[in-house]
Amino acid sequence: MGITERKEKQKLEIRKLILDASMKLFIEEGFSNVTIRRIADLIEYSPTTVYLYFKDKDEIFYALHDVGFQKMQEYNRDLGSIRNPLLRLHKMGENYINFGMDNPEFYSLMFILNEPMKKLSEMGCDWKPGDAALAALETTVNECMDKGYLAKADPKIVSLAVWSFVHGLVSLAECQRLEKLVPQEEMIRPIQIQALTWLINNLDISEKKNTGRA
Image 1 (tube, rainbow, N blue to C red):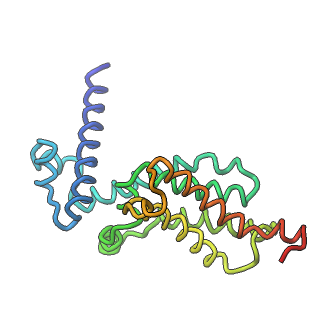
Image 2: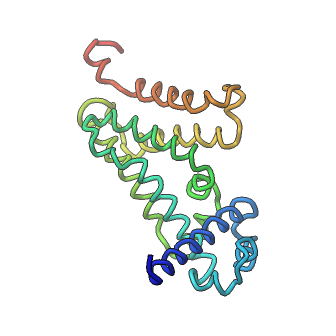
């Protein structure tokens, strides 16, 4: 590895150090209570070093926000190969649950904490990654309706219902509330997926139409 490559690798490593430390502090202490100096102290670098990579705390937050949605997108990379929209809808929900459970810090930053959305508004930034994820959900819901899997309704309302359902499953687990219903920790993920399957099966009207069930 040459000098240029080593320097570039070091830059990426320091940038990741900054982001990891910032994530930890934002979650534990709240965005407004964290300073560049506090981040620098945690990684044992000077504040000047942090400023070489990010102009301010807001830019660090925005970078973390983008990284989170990039990670979530990785879970959905194979969705396009699922032609049946109802199966795709189920897989989207399953991927959402798995992402949230595997990445609780990112999930909290992206979907639970109030401060990130306030900060995005103050920065004049749209919630583009989140809007894109919701648009993909709404597109799949629309396709389910067009192909007779879901009853005709406002796709935004149905999308909200599905999102709220899986968000609730992840949030309850993260807040350790699912333990009231699922005492064994290793059973939480399977129970979440079973609950999602129950929802999708009950939304599916195609079999009811075919069998004449009400």
